[in-house]
Image (cartoon, rainbow, N blue to C red; front, side):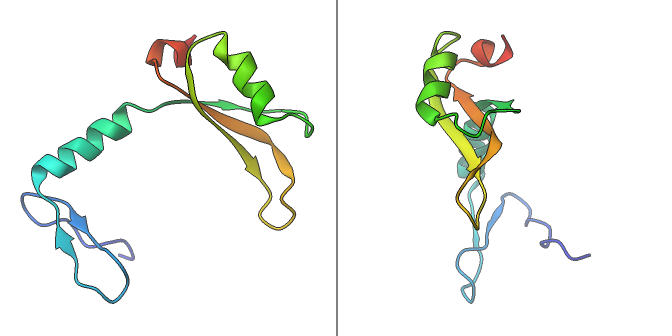
Length: 97
């Protein structure tokens, strides 16, 4: 009811900037976006000490596999760490181990 309207036949909609008309995406571009989403191999790491740094997490998880990105979640108001992070691996097997 409150969600976005269904995509048109043959492709997804790009809603663009507010106040601008929607631009249909060709099926090939839609397929590329789906492949990029499927290629992400993130894991959740919780119960971290507030003093933990991104570099420490990168070093620790590099022993398992190639780390592409470390995202530590912080409080929007204070900027302090919230005690959890997401580690993105290049290889899905590394993320599963």
